[in-house]
Length: 627
Image (tube, rainbow, N blue to C red; front, side):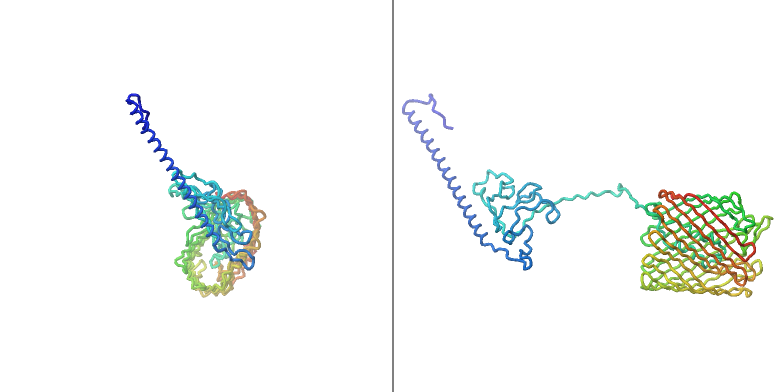
């Protein structure tokens, strides 16, 4: 801007002196301006320093005039509830904490370095050092974009700020004021499309079928006209045919089919039967035995109503005595519809298939070439209405009994179509829930039996009407004793005047006693009037009872001991049948789907009718598969 004069411009001494004078004047003016600027800068610095000292003095007076925390607990002598961010000082007064603890102080969140609190990330917030009275000490500065601390700022000060701004003190905190660092946590929730989400089904540990599905097998036939025609071995075998409840670790898983859980099973056994014909000792002919059985249990997984059942079919083959080979089947299906909170509609379907003993008092066909079939099937529909603790159940049932003709070895045929009949019945039950564990009830049952043929082979009209009255109770004592028991009386009148009416007591029971976690006892009993073909006899009073004891020796090893009693009294006749049966069964489960089963059953009937008594021993060993 200002250069030295060149030789070309020097035109004499006068001109040279003038140039030097002008250069010196300009240099002296520049020096004066620099000195003035430094003076003004020093003045501003001094003014800032005075202002800072004034603010510091004023703040010190304010701190000194602050009222102390005087709330002292009369019990502990310590300050009562100092507050968040405070601690008790050496003199018992609350003071600010020097440093917030790392990790999870109070609300479970980790405190990190936050602008305004100082410190490094993850080290917690920092507070200025304090004295015993809670007053801050040391140099307190703040940096733009940094944190407040008693030491080095976390951010460098800006060069654009003036000196007064750089040393301006931060506003001091009053004792007792909580210090918190606000931390924002971002939580991302990932949503997955339902179309690509895997469907995971819950494991089903066995089939928890309702207790009535099995418990009603024997009482189911209490009002059946063929109750007394069943052998004690069949009754015991049918009543104990259900699979032993295993440990959950060995329970079958079953299959999910729609809204149903299905548990199929298949069993194959081999053994020996000493009297497969169940005839007299003189005519008994033993044979090897092969028993094939298939069963399926199912139940619905609905929210309110339910549908469950059990179906079983078996065939017993005797290679050395083909005449004695026979099938057996039974099943129950229960439906419950929850119409309203207090109204339930119930329905049941049932069937049973067995064979008749050729030497029974009602058949007397010892020379038959096979065991004729007998079958009973029917259904029940009813509704239960609750009025607080009072419940009323009304139901109607229809059952049909059919008998197959017996074919003799000489080519003859014993017709049994005159024994086919239908039974229609109505039941009314009124129950009152005294406690959840005890509900007494009263049953009133009326039924009528109508034969397909008006007269039988002997010209007797066997249609009849009956009425029964029972009183009992449903019990559920601490899940130890559950079930129901009832007793009463029945009266049956016959259309034919030559047949006397029958009056007899009734006793029905279905009880389960959990003696221990490893031992369970089941008791079933039924009483009814059975139809007969004996001339002059109105009917047969039948009484049946079964007792079963199950004990788990190991988690996968169970044993069952059972017995049954049968008594038939032919009214207006001298014929009496007394029978009993015992059984022992052992189940050893290798896995959930494979079980080894061993069974022994003995049955005996002593009858006053010639040729109707028998004794039989059966031993079977096999495997049960639950695919």
